[in-house]
Image 1 (cartoon, rainbow, N blue to C red):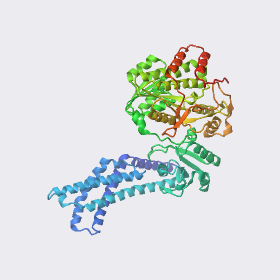
Image 2 (cartoon, rainbow, N blue to C red):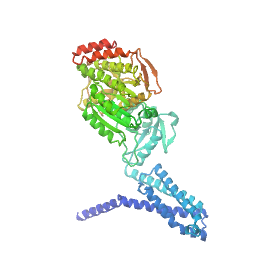
Image 3 (cartoon, helix red, strand yellow):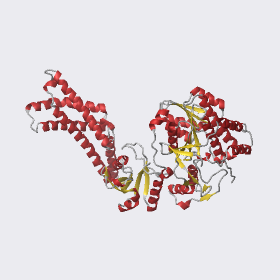
Length: 633
């Protein structure tokens, strides 16, 4: 027993010594430099032999021995300055070979210059041992061949060794494009994913039977289940954003019924050394549409080096607008909101992005006029994104005064300040609930739209309205509520099984708001293309399945419509004129015109009703908005 323990201890010591040697970066640096030195010696020797057909004369031999020393010194200095000795040889890729070519080319140029300089030095060392140019060019090619070959050979041997140690599950990757080839290459290089990409599935029939990186494209997306069964594949990956939501939902359902595992790889930049960010499918994947192609130049021209004010910056839409704005290098962003915690954490998040934009957090209420004027006077914003609003339908039904104070009067105060202080553009965030409203929240946003449009007729400021439906994952939206209900074991409560809603991701909504801001000339209502409406009960069933539970394991209970709720949402009025824009996902809507003086009088009447009974305010809203039909449930 003692001998066994001694042998075990000796084995552990040997492993420890090996690990200290193997994982010591200075040892690895030394080995890398040594490999380069040997490679340079071999390349230079072969360059001479090839140049003289393996018959090196006495004079040429003298040049070889006389120059080999300073050639190595120059190359090692360049290697040191390039820091390539720090590159890991265990994750070699095409980019590493490109780096080797660049290194060897720089070495060639330096040696050519040194060699040419020798013509100006009579009877010097360099003149006596001048190297023929053909040898330097051959040395360059051989150095690239040897170093690149060693890298690729090391990678090949590492992959085979790892494959022999760990059996890998074969998998397909949906997305036969350049990005897919890059991701497949990294997955097959590393072993921590536990799988190997053996085939691609394409969205384009003409690519079938082609290859990417020696991996075959085996079939079209429509045949993915039959192809997987044919090749005995149980694991599929899809690159995020490759499939629109409707197609993703169809493929997900096919894979689920066939017992295939489908996972997502985000379209993010990651290096071969990093862990592959494979994730499970979430509800955003099933509802997502085709990616938006933004007019980045137009947005850049609007935002770059400008002073921007975002009201409601702490909210879901407001905060995402802030994140998207930072990509276009504004000079200053005023983050205005009522909730100090949200503004505090938003500023910290944006500061962590190492931005050069000056971020100014402001705690203020848009319905307090003198406070808004003081902020405008101090910071002089050039562009305003007005996202501040009370948005929860049931809450506003029982707090009508707050909908009046913030959504109606608050919008008027900010819009008037924009005109007073010479703001270039004012972009209001509206909602589909403003169309044929059946609740106080929708009615208040409808009047806010009306005032902004009327204001555009009497001001040099360009006033623009953007209108869209529900945003996935926003505060208080149905998705986080359903998630919480599933975690609690149910039931999931739905007001009506017939109910449908439009859905859009937060980033998509924010991007289209920026697009509308760049495109708008003033007076437009931009309606965002929300795609097809989704039945809420289908959304609930999807979320149960995505939680890894049988569909019937969580009760879905119908509780009836709440006050002010609609069965379905509308994005524009029947009498609105809808026209296409250069952005396929944005439509310009033209509502009936309202005379500014008339609208102003309506708002002055409403501003006197802050302390009035809720029914009095509701009756006034019904008087001003013919389309408003309140139905108590």
